[in-house]
Image 1 (cartoon, rainbow, N blue to C red):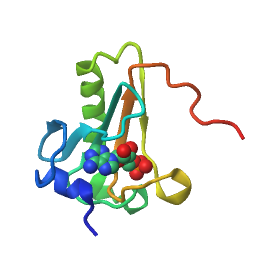
Image 2 (cartoon, rainbow, N blue to C red):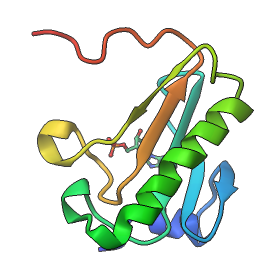
Image 3 (cartoon, rainbow, N blue to C red):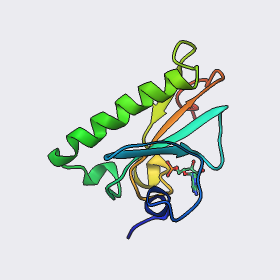
Image 4 (cartoon, protein in one colour):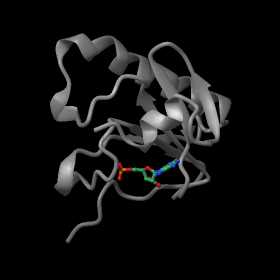
Amino acid sequence: MPTIFARIIRGELPSDMVYQDELVTAFRDINPIAPVHILIVPNKHIPTVNDLTEEDEQVMGRMLLVAKKLAAAEGIAESGYRLMVNCNRDGGQEVFHVHMHLMGGRPLGPMLLRR
Ligand code: AMP
């Protein structure tokens, strides 16, 4: 099933889009948890990381390169940032269209809280 992100990519829903090319789109998270919180998504609908195939190598590489460029453009390359991709229930995935979170602009603390 296409998701809300598919409609953002096609321009059917409003978003604060910061980048788009033939493979990926990036827009600001609607509910940011850091001063910089951008989602980088493949234009092609891929539900989860579990659905990736070798055909998707190029788009996944592009997502990382776009994250790097956006981090520089947002002024957080030197201070640092976190890239995160959630998968399924235990990963906390809410939108089933693969996306990479680019977060920074403040110290983000430990990767996970210890329980
Ligand atoms: P995840 O939990 O990894 O699936 O992350 C989904 C992210 O999508 C959350 O951080 C949401 O705040 C974000 N989100 C949901 N709907 C929108 C939207 N319409 N525009 C921008 N970000 C959204």
